[in-house]
Length: 472
Image 1: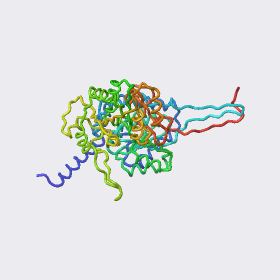
Image 2: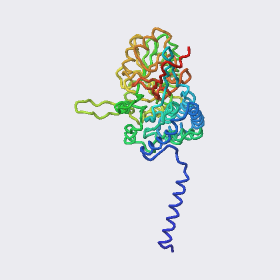
Image 3: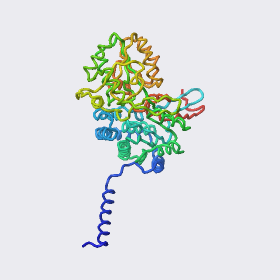
Image 4: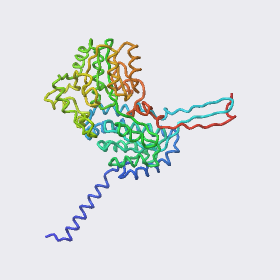
């Protein structure tokens, strides 16, 4: 019979074994229990990193690119598993895009002004430590993209990821730090918390060590950063309209729109969210979409779908009317799974739900971030533009056009006034996918930086020498 002393010894051995197993688990670099610990560690790393030259920083960027390529599939699977949003294959493509087309130190340029009175240099200098809030829609992509740009510019980085994507986000932070260490850089130059919350976000935003703030997310988080009193870059929401006129290559337009609208199940903020088409080519466009994986639902099915993907938000005051907002449970989900909720058994080839609606319909006016595309017929090109501008809601984010008429391209671009304007291609061309130009997942419309890159995370410093070094 085992006595109490023996039981106590057994318990001690079991606990010791558990502790040993726990300690053998690899610790993620740059991931801390509190934001205060993360800030302290990043500060210590930045004291070293601030003395790194461009060549040293570029060596770090090369390692980040290499590891991102190597672990793209791992992060893509983690993101879909954790958030239940998006498409693994498309997320793999997004990670490779970030690794290949996020600018590094080459984006930083020094300007020289020389004349009779001497020489002036204007250089792009780091802010110091940047606090960044990242979304659940593009979690690890945003962490890596921001890290490349911010480190290239010479900054340290603190992340407060979306809580629903904390596992893959902390994995990405660890990846960046592993790359930094492999290139001989300091540990924890990028840091975060294991369990991000509103409290950890507030600590980061208001801490005196954090000199600049960057938010990639909805209007609430952008507003919070802009009211912080610090330099802030805000990448807000959009509701990108796509217009199709009667000069377009309609079959190509149909495929391009479905390709863009369904990329990662419509999670990218640049993706086509509603379509305005001239009536005389609308039938051909819809048929083309159906040939490319779109399922057309009727008016009754639209009403049923509204009850699935929209929920009633409580009124903020007695005088305010309740309004319907997106049901977050269906954001970024497969079209087939959404259709199943209204009794439609669609095949695996179905990737988008399309429907004909009125301009006032909720799908047109609400950024769903789901593979659902409402289509509105218009009699004239001028009417398509008028409706598209209204549906974009002044976000000045992204807009798209399929047309061969240069006058139409010009008129729509001037009217909608968005940061990104894509013509005759899927929406993802706007961030450099199968197109020219660099990529980013922080598109700063509200604060005007646009397609952010390393230079966006710098401040200008002027160095003046009077009456010397002008050698002409």
